[in-house]
Image: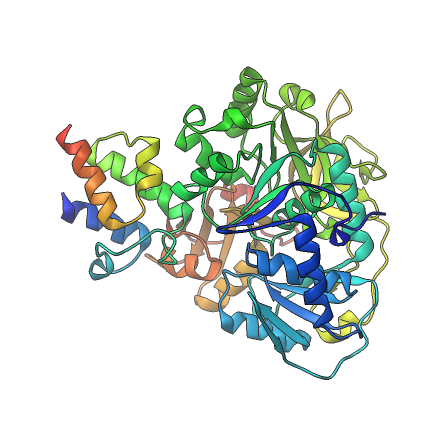
Length: 76
Length: 437
């Protein structure tokens, strides 16, 4: 799951895979703005076949958080 | 006319910036003290437009002192700021609380010029819009007449202040004496909604993209029940978004103000009242602001939309020389093509100037075309549907989306590249853009 998620982040934010670390955070990295955030959510939803809740959309503030959130949906 | 920088309205409302909060009389004291550190003679003062209290204090002080303010976009780096400072020979640079005296040589600036705002041009030399003190006061007064802002209201000011719409929200709320929550949090962040609830924000201002986000987050899930009204500007709402907002605002009895404007008209030109919005087709614009006029140039049913009013800008500037005087034009050609509906209402149907609105920013397609033609060794033309840029390149350039996105400063997924054999042209030699859509 983490590799797939890492690839989504690298592709949407257009950054090398090595840059996708747990610390990668919304608003801190200049490529991760609200436009990218919308695209990340759309890609995650279609690739993992899940529907992410509003609370989780606004809570997905870092790559670490994104892993937690996707794991939660995967286990449901 | 009342000046918002005078902070003349007695008010109990607060201006909040994170942990720091000032009431109107405390703000006034701070502004007065910042003003006392500036020279008497008119200066050109560059200020980095943070959505913060230090910005508001220094900005109001500069206007109160009759200086000219050059606003620097905080999302652009120090290097680009330096280009602006050099190009216009700014006397001061203010960034947060840090005031630096740059250039002791003062030139004679036209006394009327209050503010210089960027036009989001993409090419090297910066071009700014000159706005006079009268532009600011007249537009601000008109906006507060047609929007229901009262001094017990409270709005989030999170759109950039280097952007005319973002700045006008600050102006109109200061004039009325309303509450203002400063911040740069995105609508997609938890802290935005925490502040929204905590401060009981009751008006929502957004660009089309903000409303897209609201829908994505689920309108029903957000604390929108505390709202008195919503207002939108900063480009055309798509037909889909327009209908969705009509449905939501109609059923919730939430007044929605669709507004039309551009930086060259200080900020706003027209506002549509909520009842009209519920009955209007997408792209319709409301009535011109009080004491202003909107009409189709040719006098026919369709043509370029023209505007008259005291808020028409005083010309562009790209050098210090241009700041010595003001142009006095009575008519603003908007560059938009309007169509008159049967009920007399005007509807925007296209643009004369080829400017796309992408991710809430203006992109001049002709400028971008020129840049790309230099970048690639083959000719290319660009169209846009306000959702993405469609770049048609002669030959076989592949995988250049990211390179183009970098130049256009947009997301690479919003760039689509097509390879074509030849550029379609009309008989007069001009590019036939319609053949490319």
